[in-house]
Length: 76
Image (cartoon, rainbow, N blue to C red; front, side, top):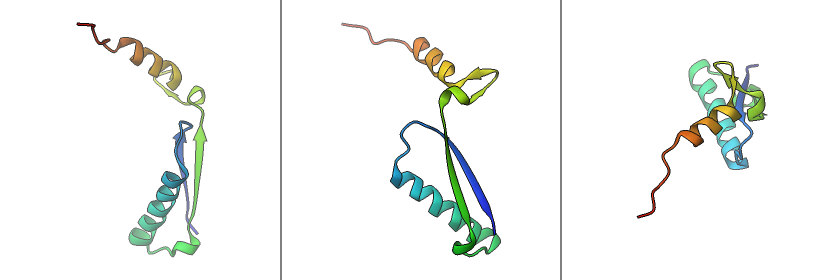
């Protein structure tokens, strides 16, 4: 009985997208490991961007820095 955990940031992943992730992960285990769909469990965990980071920096801060660094359109 395989169990797959998918972690995504909590930023509006839709119900349809989650269903596609579940179907895709289940299908992959069927194709690669020959595990029946009814024995595969998929869990999607949504993580707040304040609780996710890399390089010692939370994702919320990384994205804020990237946004501030983007060139702004000029008025012509």
